[in-house]
Amino acid sequence: MNLDHLADALGVFMQQVDPIDLYFWTTPNGWKISIMLEECGLPYRVRPVNLAKGEQFAPAFLKISPNNRMPAIVDPDGPGGAPISVFESGAILQYLGRKCGKFYPQDERARVAVEEWLYWQVGNLGPMAGQAHHFRLHAPEQVPYAIARYTDECNRLYGVMERRLAEQPFLAGSEYTIADMACVGWASRWERQGQSPAQFPHVERWLDTVRARPAVERGMHIWVEEASKVDMRDPGVRAVLFNQRAR
Image (cartoon, rainbow, N blue to C red; front, side, top):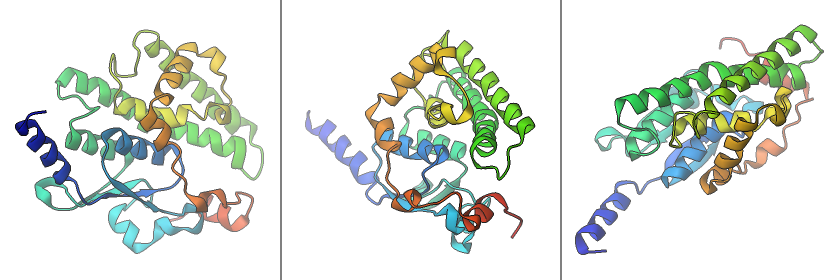
């Protein structure tokens, strides 16, 4: 490496000294951002938001995430060098992609493809899989119609992925992008959604490929000790998580 390249490398390092604060809980939505931060090599600090205790409703957190949901980030080195907070996982992935110039292409056609599959996850796979998790695992009583409704919809969505991944190695095309990061956590929980990988061999191949990436492995195994202590049978926990009203 010559001196000019060394200076460039040091400049990149010095641009991001203070860590990004990641407001996080152990969920597929939280993993999207921990994976991206790991992939970009950005220093970050995990700020657990204990959903079971209602910490998502704290006034300080609502200033960062007005929808009282995580993940959210605070980047001390935002645009113009001033701090910025970003909520909504899709917006965070796009912001970090622009910041780092990675996994979110600048070419307009390639970017449109990424955004199509990113928004598909945000509007389809995440919400439908989340409802399947709830009615299959956490509802206080079995509701056969709801279980069938969301299990079947997840099956349809896996079929959408299957057809796409039969044609391309990754969701947005030939390259791994934030669209894959957005989907991998949800698709990894196929069993909770009543799905079978054997029915979707191209999805299974994609999952194996993406999960083999070291940054994905690290991002999906962030340890939040409080999360391991949550008892989903506790009526108080269930009230906080599933009986939320406007505050």
